Amino acid sequence: MFYHLPLEHEVLLHPKYFGPNLLNTVKQKLYSEVEGTCSGTYGFVIAVTTIDNIGAGAVQPGRGFVIYPIKYKAIVFRPFKGEVLDAIITQVNKVGIFTEIGPMSCFISRHSIPSDMEFDGANPCSYKTKDEDLVLQQGDDLRVRIVGTRVDAKDIFAIGSLMDDYLGLVS
Amino acid sequence: ADENASQLVFPKEFDTAETLLVSEVRLLLEHRKEQSAADADAPEFGPVFNKTLDYTQTFSKFQSRETISAVRSLLTHAHLHKFELAQLANLCPDNAEEAKALVPSLDSRDDEALEQLLDELKTHIQSQAYQQ
Image 1 (cartoon, chains in turn green, purple):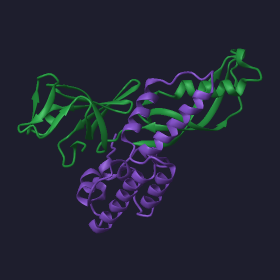
Image 2: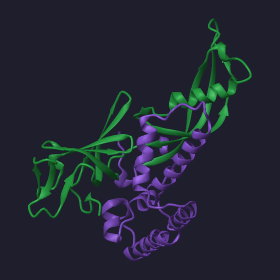
Image 3: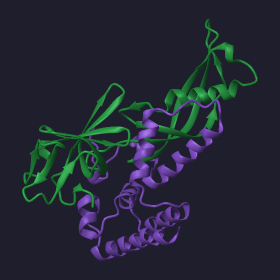
Image 4: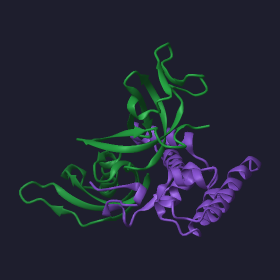
C-alpha cells in the first residue's frame, strides 16, 4: 500500500557547504539520502513530497560538522500481510513464480499456486491449466495476496499466494 | 510483527498517515519527474523511483486529477477505513463478492450498498473513455 508519511531525518553538513547555497544543499542531501532507501518500519521511501521544517543547525563539538534535523513528508510503499496487490511476473520456474510489485520483489511458491495449474517447462516457461484456459508467463499481470514479508538489511521481500478466489491473472 | 491487513491491524506508525491511490502516486511521481527535467543539476532517479513510476503507470485506473478527486469523494462518503478506500480504488472489484474476497475487512458490509458503490466507481472508469 502506498502511504503519505511524515518522517524525520538528520543531515550532516560539512563546513565546505556553509555559504549562500546552504539550505539548498541541505535539501539536496535530504533527497539523496532518503529517496530510494528502505526500512522494515516504513517500507520503501519512493519520493519526498514536502519539506515541512528544517531545524536550527547544531554544530558538533570538536568536529565542525553541523546537524540539521529535518521534518518532511514522503510517498512510501509498505506491504502488509493479508493485502492484495497487482504484480508483474518477471520469472517463471519449477519452484514458483517471481514477480515485482513496484520497487519490491514478491515470490509465489509453487505450493501457493492452485493445484489445477501445472508447470510447463517449454520456452517460454509458464503455469497453465490442463485445458490451457489460463496461462501464467513472464510479463503477465497477477493479483497476489501477501502472506508474509521478510526484511533484509535494506530491502523488503514478500511472499505471495494465488490460492484465494479472484486472485491470479488480471483480465 | 502482528500486522494483518485483513483485520485492519497496522503498525502505529501508519495511524496518522494517509493512504495514496496508485493513480495519485502516478501523478505525484510524474510531476516530480517534470520538475527534475527542468533542473539541469538534478541527479538521475534511482531504480526505486523508476520501478514505482512504471508500476503506477501500468496499474493506474484513473487518469485525470478531476476523476481521482471525484473517486476519493465518492469513497470517502462510504465511511470506509482508509486502507479499504485505497484498495477499492486500486483493485476496482466488479461486485460485492469480489470486493469482500479481496478486502476481507469489508465482510460485514451490506452487499447492496457495496454494489451501488462499486457501480458508481465503474461509471467513473468508463467515463474516462469520453474525456480525451
